[in-house]
Image 1 (cartoon, helix red, strand yellow):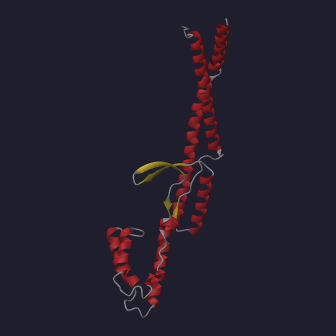
Image 2 (image 1 turned 30 degrees about the horizontal axis):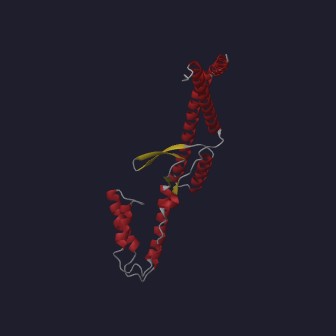
Length: 239
């Protein structure tokens, strides 16, 4: 009698678990997964648009627009969950954030300004027996750059400059090292995104995870009850 009562209780509990709209929870979970993926996709597209606005401002050589676009991109990325596919020498990986990008045009302008300053300084050194060595290097390397498609910060172009400047033994004595070409790292940006943030997509993802956990718990409860009923239906034999 006791075993029958216990089995009846387990069967009632199992019936409640099974009929407690499990299929509805599963449907809600699927819909939330789709909704989460859609919102993450929208956030990614918005990030790409903002990043492109930075590159457009860079191409337009508008430093104020560049600063404003960078700030907007940084703010958005830090307050949204942004997944991005990053390609590192053919190896792709998923990262949180914008991924690295460069302000190529701004770098080129700053480098040319520094070279012009160095050239003007070299022109002022009347005692320089080699003349304007920057101009001489530029004449050679610019011609080769046009021919082979080199430009800053291409390694071939920089190597050409170093080779041409090294031809003049009085370089150190004449302080021609005053041309401080800025590092490309100063024009490299990579804004990181949080793993989770309480934005719209973040809240939907949290709901999705919550429903998933509920489904997992319900599954283990169902499995436990099924095993309990099976054990009652097949009691172990006593020797």
